[in-house]
Length: 112
Length: 109
Image 1 (tube, rainbow over the protein chains, first blue to last red):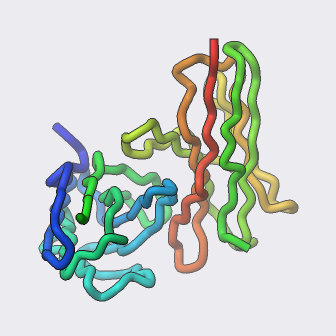
Image 2 (image 1 turned 90 degrees about the vertical axis):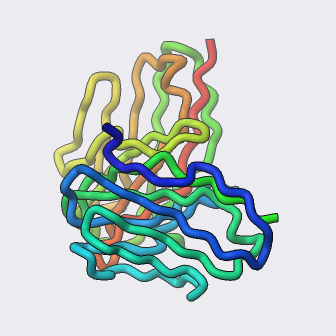
C-alpha cells in the first residue's frame, strides 16, 4: 500500500483552466503539506494542515486553495492556471510538525 | 540571506572516494535538521536526521555546527547509486521545514 498517494501524476492543461490535485495518506499522520518544486528544483512549502486546520499558508496566489476534508486527505485546487504554475507539486505528511516528511510521488503540472 | 543555502554542485566524485558538503541556515533558533535524498524525477526521501551529537549511518555521517550555523554530510566509499541530489532541511520560524536548493552529487566509475 502506498503511504502517500496523489493523483493525477501528470496533468497537461491550457492557461485559464481550473484543476485539482488530490492527496491521501494512510500513515495516520496529523500533518499534511503541499510543496511546489519548480524548474530550478527548489522545493517550497505552500500550505500545511494539522488535523484539518490550516497552520501554514505561504505567500501563494489566492488562485490556489487547499481543502482538507479529514486529516488523511489534503487536496489542492488551482483556478485560472498560468504558465508559471507549471511545476511538480508534492504532497507530504508527517507525524508531527517538524518531523520526518513522507512525500507522495508528485504531480507534474504543465500549463500550455 | 536565504534561510537555507547549499552549494548546488555538481560534485563529481570517483567511485570509492569520499565527498562532503555543507548547508548553512540563517535561523539560530532552528532545532530540527535533516538530510533528504532526491533522485531524478522522484520524490525526496529522508536520508538521515542530524542530531547535536552528529549522526552516522553506514557510509553516511552528518554533523551539526551550531556556532557557525551549518550542517554537513559526508559520504565515504561512494557508490554509483549515491548519485542524487541531497537536500538539506531545517525547521525555521513557525515550525516550518525549509528546504535548501540541493547539492547534486555524481559518482563516476
